[in-house]
Image 1 (cartoon, rainbow, N blue to C red):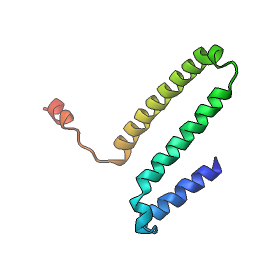
Image 2 (cartoon, helix red, strand yellow):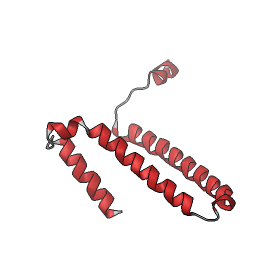
Image 3 (cartoon, rainbow, N blue to C red):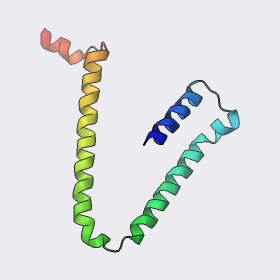
Amino acid sequence: MFSLIVAITIGFILGRYQMLPAFILKYNDHLINLGVVLLLFSMGIQIGLEDNLISKLGIIGWKAFILAGFAILFSVLILHVFINRFLNWDNPHDKELKK
């Protein structure tokens, strides 16, 4: 996990301060797509190697549903707190309600 955080931080710094040559930036989208394809390919291999995958599909489905639900819920909650706490964002609907 630490190595992932370090990699993202280094990538952010390199991108933020434009420290990469133009030819790398030109192909950045292609490199990202290639990385995602390789990740999905290796995940497919790992899933294919699982002997009793069919019997676990129900459990895997529920776990995925719960994980996705909590990710969405907490993303919206954190965004709501961030907007209300750190941004001076005037909602036009609030003005109409106050009239």
